Length: 264
Image 1 (cartoon, rainbow, N blue to C red):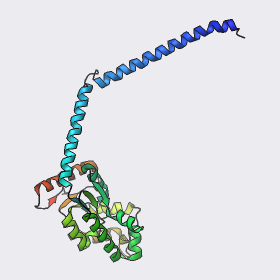
Image 2: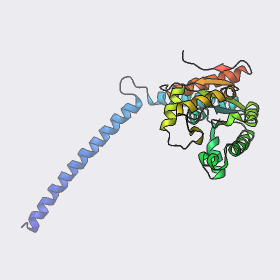
Image 3: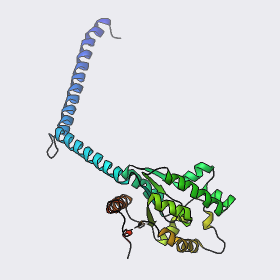
Image 4: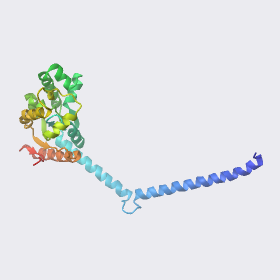
């Protein structure tokens, strides 16, 4: 049992120990702050000073803002429209291009589903393809006529409707996104989406895809640009390449069809 006197003798010792521990921790914190300050101020070899970093960052931001302003000025009154087969990647690449150009992205199929409350597959299955194409053309016409500055991905069969082709020509800069037939089949086979147009008795998926491609090629061919994307192509690289093509086309005005890189 510790007596009161002994406890009083021990208290100063404990306090001294605590003070030493606190001092040690404070020294460690100061050392860490100095080291971190050294890193941010460029004390370590090869690092720029913090003032240099700040200036570089400011220049970078100014350049990005300037480039963003140029892009908006260039594409602001135009809708960039992706057309092509289902499974070609129109929505995926369209979103990346929209983000790169700081434009709004819209998927026509999603807009139809939001307006109707039904999935595209359900609409086709319950009301028929003619009913769906009529509603689809109205939605796409509304999206295109509501102003420029959007990136729009259209449904795979939308360009078979003359009203859609006219609206795209008048109010959009269109891109036919092309991929190999084999890649399309592989993607559609793996897709969980219900696609009534791919369900046909007596025809395999490859036969249906091949037939649809042949039927729609002339409609897709009305697009201002054609861009081929391989299965293993890097999405970011494709985005940059396509943005460059779009900008070149806009700066050059009307002219021959712009083609992307196609396989041999």
